[in-house]
Length: 323
Image (tube, rainbow, N blue to C red):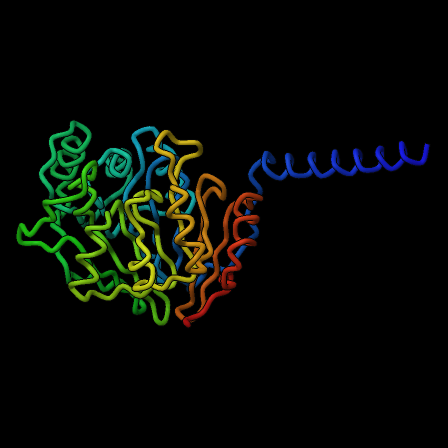
């Protein structure tokens, strides 16, 4: 009888643990904890599924959009901008012409005034890309071909610098088998504000990373937007050493057919002690900085991320500061 009671207690405890884990994994998205944005730099990694989109709002209210997700995510991007009272964009950026990055841009252009448009300027014949370019022409938006060394001084000391492509038709033309020239020539941007910096890599490949390291552009950043949704062909160990991030954001769709993020990439991030946030598990991810420290506020917590972070024993970065 005593043995049965012990077995029953074990079974009950196991059931409680199972139900708890299931609830944590499948609970509805939480209402984010309010955080201070007034007078601070705000960055939002938007939850656009298997795509990429990030909104930057400067301390004085200037707005920059980097990519706009897939065509299916267009309405979500528009809603996210309106939620932050964005009425116009000082700068919109298309890192490269693939539909999972520029699919929602035409709708953004149609719904918001856009003053300047930064593009990798690669020749591309897809209908989605051509429609976006036509919208830019129709609205009379200033079109800027990206070139390494180009800088955008925004406000309050906020600066956006182009690290790739090289410009002057100096394209990366050779990539590994199965790689993408369009990805390799992505616009890579470094955002800086005081002692805080973040790197936006589009779908950069290892060839892009190698070229940037060789050219000596400033790569160090506290937060890294991981290239190509966490593909195994980006975010090399050498590149992570050069960037030396404390935290990383992966924009990726749940259970996508590409297997992103690759386990190899997650392993490299873990080995480097980088704390990882993922839109498929965390939803929208907000990063705010006063120019000295920064905070990361995921819309929802995830037990998968929590368990992975516990194994990786990363540095604490919810309230990070320059190392």
